[in-house]
Image 1 (tube, rainbow, N blue to C red):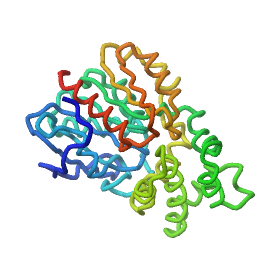
Image 2 (tube, helix red, strand yellow):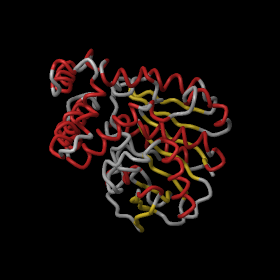
Image 3 (cartoon, one colour):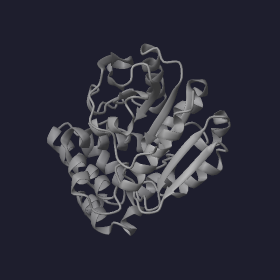
Amino acid sequence: MPRGDLFPDIGPFETGYLPLSEGHVMYWEQVGNPAGKPVLFLHGGPGAGAGVVHRRFFDPAIWRVIIFDQRGAGRSRPLGGLDNNNTPQLIADIETLRQFLNVERMLLFGGSWGSTLALAYAQAHPERVTGTVLRGIFLGRPAEVDWFLYGLQRVFPDAHAAFAGFLPPEERHDLLTHYFKRLTDADPQTQFAAARAWSVYEGSCSTLLPSFEAVSAFAQDRTAIGLAKIEAHYFRHGLFLPEGGLLAHMDRLKGIPAEIVQGRYDMICPAQSAFELAAAWPGARLTLVPDAGHSALEPGVRAALLAALERSRVLS
């Protein structure tokens, strides 16, 4: 039966660090049933990293959960590393991890940027994907990036004023360029100050109702520096997505089932993208949560994701 709350805390049964190309090292862990159905957790951002709470979405008796921190994020090294950090390399990293762990096919579970990366990986390697559970759809289009940088002020004028106000008035016409300049400054304190301002802005807009816990989590130095630096880097390069964007290549996902969970009042990734993705994907089931924003931990989104995973147990 579908649950209304997360599963109890659980530790990993295996962890490790996997050398990647160009000096990057990936942190990875496995949780749950070593003989269970493989599911790959893809965290958001890009650059946010995975947390302990993410293990708790999965029934440990059913799933073999593979969690990793993407290049430059979380416990992977170097933290905030931008060199040789792009979407094709993240896709290659997933293949490296999949082969290392001897996984033939797997369910993809990701929200926000995690949904973007799941789609990009599935389009590159559809034969390795049993299905997807996606939340808070982000397709990485210029209009979506512009909404994050400027459009959010229509709904969160106070949070946006603090975000833009971190910069002097003469630089606020181009937030991305001038934030990135500070996020890559030689002075670590300049980097951290800009990263906290960027990350707190995102955390402040991520829930339907104000959440001190969400903002506090986003403000932590490790989360903030990975999220802000890598997110700005990816934004500046169109998320390193293929020509035409993700929707132009949906034919590659024919026959792959999809669960899409979307908060009606998601302001980070507005619902339009979820509707457009579902319309382009005949195998998709869209669940619109009427009383939720962006966060996976909001009650309605959490319950819908757990129900989606329950339905996905039959995939193989």
